Amino acid sequence: MRVRGSVVVVTGASSGVGRATAEEFARKGCSVVVAARREEALEEVAERCGRHRNARTLVVPTDVTDAESVHELARRAVERFGRIDVWVNNAAVTVFGPFQDTPLEEIRRVLDVNVMGYVHGARAALEVMREQGRGTLVNVSSVVAALPQPYTHAYGMSKAAVRALGTSLRQELWLDGMRRVKVCTVLPATIDTPLFDHAANHTGRRPVAMPPVYTPERVARAVVGLVRSPRREKVVGPAGRQILAEARTMPGTAERMMAFQADRTHLSRREPGPDTQGNLFAPLPGGGAAHGGWHGRRRTAARRLATAALLTGAVLGAGRRLGAR
Image (tube, rainbow, N blue to C red):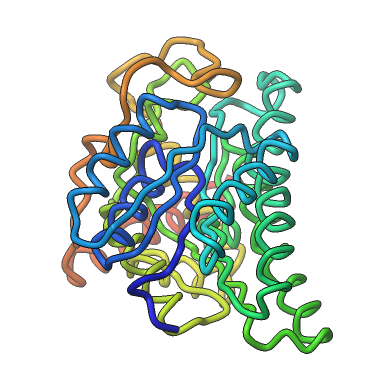
C-alpha cells in the first residue's frame, strides 16, 4: 500500500509511541487524525505534524473506553478526509503492584483502556474499511504478550488479549474474503516513553524502563512499514525477538529470567515510588512528550547477548541453589 497521501487515525497520540507514530506518518505526507484524552497535548502534536509538507491534521479528544466517543472519532475522520486508510490502536495505561495489593478497580481500568479501547477502535475502523474494501488496522501490543512480567499483571493480560484480537480479526476477514483489509500487530520491547512515570504504582519503588530500551521512533517506523508491506506481526527491537524465541524454546527458564530481570531492573532499588493511581482515571496535567527520558537507543548485539548471558547464568545459578536446599 502507498503510504503517502493516506488518511491515518492514531489513538493515544498525546505522548510516547502514539505521538512518534503520528509525526512519522505526517513526515510521509499523510493526513493525520490524532486522538487522546488531553486536548492540549494533541494540539502540540498537530502543530508538529503540520510542519511537514503536505501533512494535514485533525484533533479529536477521545476517551477510548467510550464506544460512542471512538465512533465519533471515526465519523469525524471520514467527514474531514473522506476515508480512513490506516487506524493505529495505541492508547494504553498500566499499573505496577503485587497482585494481592493492586486494587481491583485499577486492574479493571487497565483492561478497559487497553482491551476494550482496542475493541472499540477495531469496530469503528473496520466498519469503515469493510465498506471501502481496503485499509490497515495496526494494534500495538507488546512482547509481554508472549512473556509477561511480575507486578504488571493487568498490562500483560491486556497485551496478550490484543495479540489474540488481531489473530481472530485476520481469520474473520479472510473468511469474508476481505483480502485488502489488513490487521497487523506490533510487539515492541521496552520503549523510551513516559508510560513508566504515568503508571499507577503500589510497589513502593519507582517504575523504570527495563533495559535494553529502544526509541519510540523505532516503533513508529515499524508501524509505517507495516502499512507499506503488511505482516501478521512485527517485533520491534532485537531484545524483543530474543524474548519471544526464549519463550517458545525454554519457557520455564524464560519465565524465571524475566522475573529476575523485572525485579532487578524494572523497579528502582534506589528511588522510592509514591502510591499513586497515575493516569488511569484522569490524564496528568500539561503537554505530552514522545520520550520518557530513558535514553532509548540501539544497543550493540554484543552488549545484548552479554546481558542475556549474565541474566541466564544468574537465574540458573539461583535455581541450582534452591534445588540444593
